[in-house]
Length: 494
Ligand SMILES: *Cc1c(COP(=O)(O)O)cnc(C)c1O
Image (cartoon, rainbow, N blue to C red; front, side, top):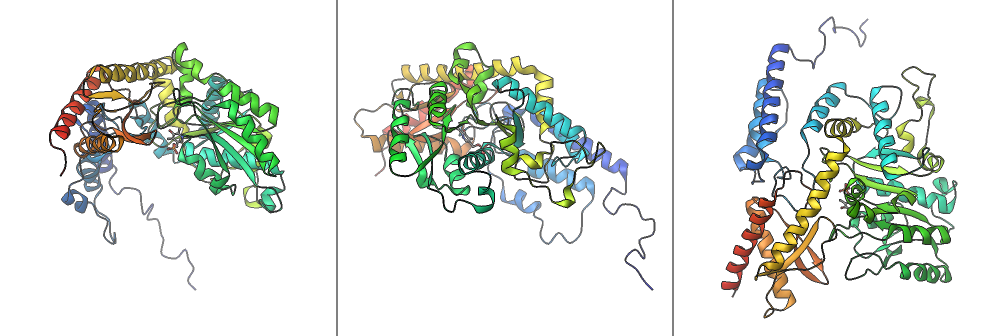
């Protein structure tokens, strides 16, 4: 009689390397290439992936493997040199962090450990607790607040709104959904990130029920006096106001809503106060003049922010902090019989992170955060953040003295929005040239800006979340933009 174990013998692992020395050599070569990429970050901007490089590493049907040494070669030659360029000191597009060397050590260690951080009792869980606890102290949340590391602020926002929804509708809503309840309403400033609209859609509130509160045109901050009026109007119409999202660092212009004032409205009206602090929350560790922009963040019921942007932790890593641990757990905990916790062995270690979010299987994101904080310390990272804001101001100064350029919004933190200064052209023509300049720069990758819209006009935008940027990078950027603007002005399109 034959059984499923027949013929397996003592072959050992089918997947561990046959030749450990070959593997050691391959790993060392990849490590050397990693050090070189980090050390020479300044000479590695984005460039288009050459077709033959792409084809050289295509999987095809992947029917059989290749030697480990070849895998290392393909990584080093075919993939690692063709990153997205956000490790380069002149990368200012969107809001992207540049990673860091200590985080790379942690990524290797975490990959070897291969920890599943859904829960249980092991070092990775202890490190994640430590990181959450450190963050809780930085943001001034109470000692019994909870938190979880997630992919990014987008996922953290979904979790926060799910918890807010549950608080508004009661625990039974996990079972019954939104049926039989008046429509919930979420409020946020115009200029709120699209991730918030997406989150309202995913939790069934619907983006039509995301009310945009007007902003102050000077500061880009929520006009809080309008918020209370809108809440009252919605109650009048039979809707159920549920949550206010305060933005700490808006994506288009780096603006900060008045968090303390929003918290006060939420307290009076019985609303959940969520803060989207994807990058801007970290002004909490910057110089005092910047830090005051996030005053009131400690009043949040939930806070979403990223480690992968302005804390320079390698992608991906975001975080959700929750004031009310019981509410947090009530929104997500599910423990079917096959996940029972057992004493203090491997299956101990309560609370489990799977009870604080969506994912059951989770990677060891906390280690790269831990390594980053361990290696540099929070003061040094805070200095980088402060320095980035100073550079955004420097950029604005250079733009203002340039005859060809002007600022399009006041610099509040680390974002500078600017464009061509050509009174003879109307806004749409100026917007077209602004976009063309950005597109041209992006096509070479040597300097990367992105665009946004300020009062309906397309503008150039630099978001400085970059620990490698120096003042001369800012000067070079303005110089390059000036040259392209001059070209565009001297050869208008037919
Ligand atoms: C980047 C960003 C988000 C989305 O965060 P991800 O980490 O990219 O998911 C949300 N809000 C703001 C203000 C952001 O800058």
